[in-house]
Length: 139
Image 1 (cartoon, one colour):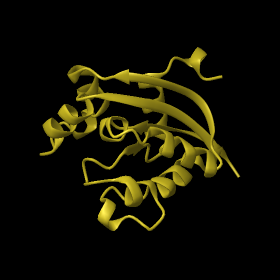
Image 2 (spheres, one colour; image 1 turned 60 degrees about the vertical axis):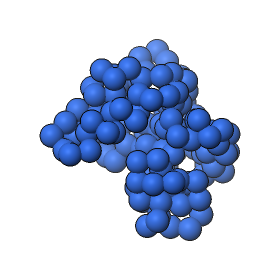
Image 3 (tube, helix red, strand yellow; image 1 turned 90 degrees about the vertical axis):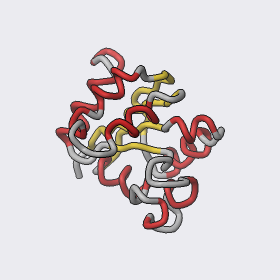
Image 4 (cartoon, helix red, strand yellow; image 1 turned 30 degrees about the vertical axis):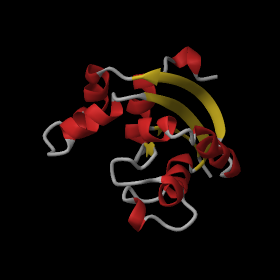
């Protein structure tokens, strides 16, 4: 089995509702090693850069405004098949369609206010991790 790193973000809605600890608890219960973590508030430009792949989509402005609306916690997680494991732990983007017991099903309020972000592929994970963390921070 391949050990993979993935980026996870605890989004402004979760941070603002005080449920970051519950999400971190679920990270640990799922068997992840937290390689790096930081709390920050994205500027509009940083959010736009991070989500640049979605620039032409109708939800881009709303997404970047939301992601720069409050504090987030960016995490680098590591586990066997870490990308798929984190996506399974989060659940579907729409909390109403997420599997029971997933973070988004249990804690998410809407498609946008779904508490967490996760990389969807190794290439995406590499870009996203590099967006928030320098190599020396990944110990």
